Length: 456
Image (tube, rainbow, N blue to C red; front, top):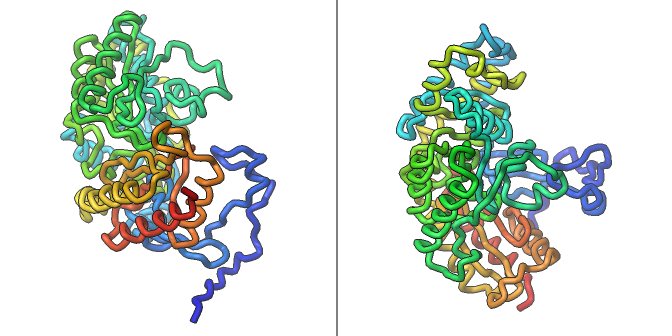
């Protein structure tokens, strides 16, 4: 007997709506191709308006770590809405949830050396705040010529002008140029594609680190404010640096007085199998941008974490240069902070980092097996519950697989009960951190179904 989709009451809706523009989408494409409309979410599954239910292997957008049925977080939001739905945290006022979250985050990131928080509305806000604080830190200390930033090619740091400027992917830059002056890029430590004609990840890490130092010297170390990197490059295609890379970066930055900004918007709170991406590599950054999983995506929240070195420069300052002339109306939103406090407690209680590490081993092994089976998979890579299949027309040339084939893979996987994300010629999976071994197998089976649609 065939299982019919359940009635949702939203069957009449159409994805051809012209009344809004989708983020990260060409408006013409959105008009030509109807969007999927989701109307229900429970556990690790989402249901569209036709009643078709799929496992969410995208995890919302890297951020629904605890799944869609985390009652403690929902209750915290409801309770805070009843008690105090909003008040500002600008000068002279704050709320109890702000203080609770700051205390929780200080404890959470103590091993990373982070002792202060600055709250934002999301990841792009957090990156922008890191860039501003980095420049201001040097001005406070009298190094007023240190305004330049260096980042990684393929790195992604959000969509504000500062973040777009340090982004290392032209897709997020070209349509908005000219961007912020004083931003430079070096190659990412990417084993599959790099300019060094080598596949040795240790050698690639050394070469990229050497290029960082060379760029700092070329620009003049006394003009460089910070180097920014994701501990694992997410939107750029889940590029996992060799374990030696970030420690080398830390040493180079220290030697030249350059701050190290870790963009942990994706990697914080367990996704790599460690509680932060920096900790995964044994590194303590100076500034850390976080968001996404901090509230399990139930409320827009971000936090910039700040170490003692940076904090002391501001807190000991005696003139106007140390004043924080930056903030957002919703910085420290009490409902968002209450959601984040509950999320951190539940994240720790469930020890999702350990589950991400264990399920991540199963996922990474399965992705490698799919690469061995399907010759259009050029590379399978990832760490923890961050995974990527890079699709190619042929392995020798590494030319990207065409858009139509990529869409066919994703569509077939969806029909088989799993939603995955395609970005260029990458298939990215980033499921909730509460998934089970059977969920991992379900993802791999659906990918296998999708990959089987490609003609050899």
